[in-house]
Image 1 (cartoon, helix red, strand yellow):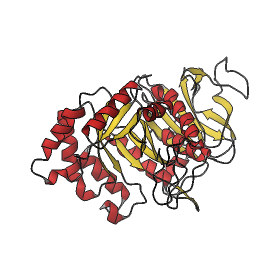
Image 2: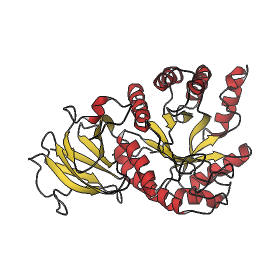
Image 3: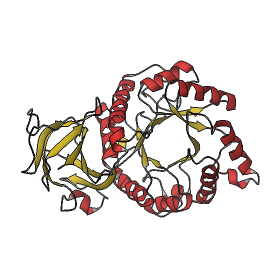
Image 4: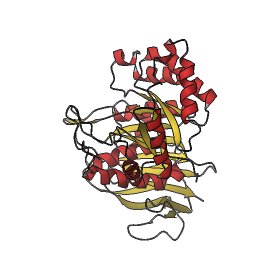
Length: 396
């Protein structure tokens, strides 16, 4: 386990009032997106964040993706670091959203400038999803875009967004996006963040609680170590509607949905942050556009077979070399009864309680506590709600 921060954040925050930041903390977030009319207002909000145990991603208008075009651009970095860098609530500095390839050289300079002056805090940038056009990306392929970004900008966190939930059905290649991001994050040795849909807008549908859960747990199974929601407050523009807070900052039923998910994330986080993703498997169907081996439990990992429905299996190792497994029910309509068989025998199989965060024995058979070993290789048969996941540790 680790005491590091698992960033849980959002886009589009509430009005700058103290009670709103108490509410953000109550909703289980760990990082608040902080904007203000000026530096003094941002500093006031940082005080509220500190009071309520939140970290803050500061959005200061002096930091822009094109700032390196000015001769004295580093003076703005100096001023922003001097203003916020010593504050106990600071998590990072917002730089830009969804940059084009032509911006990468300048962004690399900005990231390095912040790293030299304040290495303890993020210079945060978020990338396009894989359905962005080549004109938006500046590259022929999305994979080339992400590779160029990582090699040129060298961020400490790889962040991207993907809103796959359309009114007409699911957008294809959601898992392809996760696969590319996971691969590049592992190659660079940095964590990644997925920004998921919480507020319907344009032709994106209103996510059900099961859709929300599915987005969270599929991201975790691929190795995400940070998450954010788009949005928290509902913007009063276009056809935005039904966010966790409405346009008048009243809680909606979705506020309770994200609070439950955030509290689960916070219980899982001390374990997840100490893990390294070693494999991802889909069963029985391989999603279009993903590597063929992601649909085959064919020898590399600890899970030999899984039965009972449609599943995503994420495999991990911890610092002691122990294997961990996350099993996700990909069905968002029906619960499933999963039966997982291990490739090698393990005497102890424990799951992480999403209430307490503690490890507890996994039931060997339905409703029966695990009291003995697992020499036959069968871990257990257990129920998973629609879109839900379970994190387990295996040991001898």
